[in-house]
Image (cartoon, rainbow, N blue to C red; front, side, top):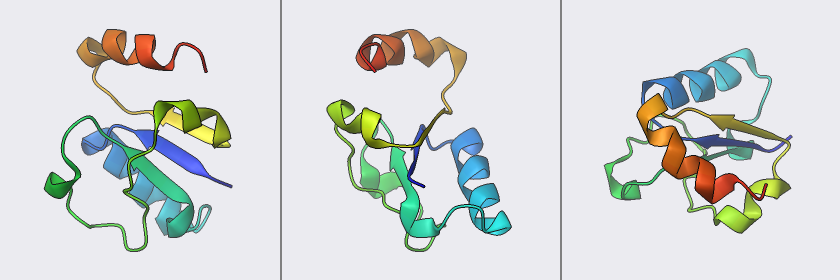
Length: 83
């Protein structure tokens, strides 16, 4: 099962760590999409896929979690609306 977490602040990290801790999702099946530079992301999840996910690939995931702040949602909503 492939999971995409959009946003990797406190909420996104909690989701990812919970999935891995419960062994419900394999670390290599967790993908993270952030708007900032990936170099600022801590590698706290071994084997997690922090590669950029193009917005046209969102439909390829089994689960998509929106872990963004409410004030950021309106911009994100326009990007992901087709999916």
